[in-house]
Length: 221
Image 1 (cartoon, rainbow, N blue to C red):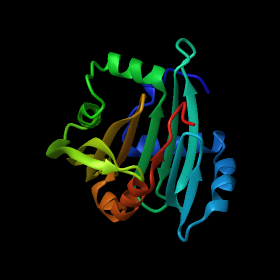
Image 2 (image 1 turned 45 degrees about the vertical axis):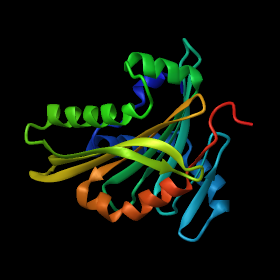
Image 3 (image 1 turned 45 degrees about the horizontal axis):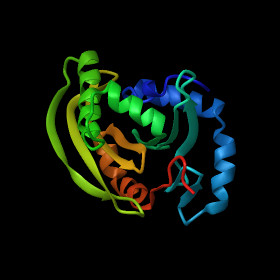
């Protein structure tokens, strides 16, 4: 699967993305990924162990990963996504190699990785607002926190979008949190988004993912 890695950023809002990702997951080898990580079961969680990334995630969430390669620059991005089976919520982790990191920072005109979280959260809101005139940003928070097993310092942006999602004439608030940081020469981005009430229900899962994330990155020994 080869396409520009810069096209794989925050996903489009849920209704479209959930349906498309379900289809994509089947074509990208969900069965293979599940069989690999199911051997590392930890209670209600599974343990993904790859060269690039290690992380725990719920056994009952749909999980899949893939790597994209830019045919022009040979830059790579490793992506890992999990989708709730009974909620409107999703989590993604992306690790950029050094080439893709430089390209991303240059094209987005960013001076540091932590500022990417704000830019991506704002971009997510603008996309929703452009497709839903009822949507409005009612909360935004920026800060830093320590991520994962290695307790790496990262920037985060959390936003709440009122009436960001319409389903059969009913409107629901949308929540989105983006975290970004550098692991060596690799840019890393995590995102947690979905219907507000479902994200609140999945908060413990999100925290488990954050606490167990170990980014080894490209070129790690």
